Amino acid sequence: MKALELGPLTRAKGSVRLPGSKSISNRVLLLAALAKGETGVRGLLDSDDTQVMLNALAKLGLVIGHQGQSEYLVVGAGGVPEKRGKLYLGNAGTAFRPLTAALAFAGGSYELSGVARMHERPIGDLVDALRAMGARIDFLGAKGYPPLAIHPARIAPGQTVQVRGDVSSQYLSALLMALPLAGGGSIAVEGELISKPYVEITLNLMRRFGVEVRRTGWSRFEVPGTAYASPGTVDVEGDASAASYFLAAGAIGGGPVRVEGVGRASIQGDVRFCEVLEKMGARMAMGEDWIEASGRAPLRAFDLDLNHIPDAAMTAAVLALFADGPCILRNIASWRVKETDRIAAMAAELGKLGAGVEVGPDFLKVTPRKLKSGIAVDTYDDHRMAMSLALAAFGGIALRINDPDCVAKTFPEFFKVFGRIAR
Image (cartoon, rainbow, N blue to C red):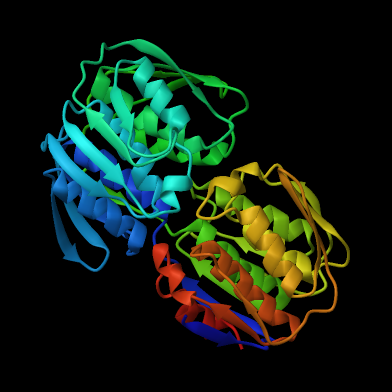
């Protein structure tokens, strides 16, 4: 297995132009494909997950032209042209869940599969909601999990469907984006909706493509049967989750470290990671499309509900190594159904580095202790494990990161860019 030797690191300073947001990139590609008209997409993320979506849309008969670095032209079809296909979607939840819903309403026959881990990530609640509307979907393996077979079905417009909100917000986002294809309808959310900022991204982008969803709190959503229409051009903002690693480096490595491409005008919830850094004592500054952090360890300990920023919360877990006392991350149960069981994985690797760790079904407690040098940390084929654990090298230690190439899922150049601001 390939490994990367990193550290010890003592200083972080500089600026980083962020790659495009994965969450925005894959949503925009799908909406542009389902819209009428041509959509120019600028700043699209170049990564494994977006390549999965691009390949899937091409197999479904969509014409997508590559016009230059990070620039594409999507020729919208107002639906899904190809009525038969087998799609391999890797471990891209932002492709698998929305495509499942869109294809359930497309009137064709499709098979969707992915890597072994994707076949362990639950999708039963989304399938149940789609079946309740009349969709015909079979589980080809274990019940409630991919791979899936989708068959032609007639879906009556204007239905009300229920979906659980406490496992993954991607189920709700998938239904929201697909319902215009079924003539609209209503969605009632069962239980507490997690990761609300990601649903905000979905609603914002649907609005740009001409579909205005009305909601009652976070429990009911009214989706019109309006057809999607191209807004002309969409600029993909920088990835706020990726920004967290560099801002955290600035907070413990002196700084200032500035990220460009995301800021006050962002539609991504992970910009609120800045609030975590401020509570820990970092100095923060923000403009419309930039954020800057500086500071030095030790930072202040925290006890926080991080349900609203589950991805950036992983960065906070590693920052706990640099706190002046025990840190508790609460309400992070969704970590267990991500690219790996992130609660178990993070606890194991922070423990290897010398931290005291305590875990529960939905929390992680990290007690900072003297870090051990020369440790090899595992990344579990999870890009966020690799990127967040890199920060441990600011603790005056050298470490080895196993399988660093897993960052290709969302940020292939991460370690090269990280090396430019870390000394």
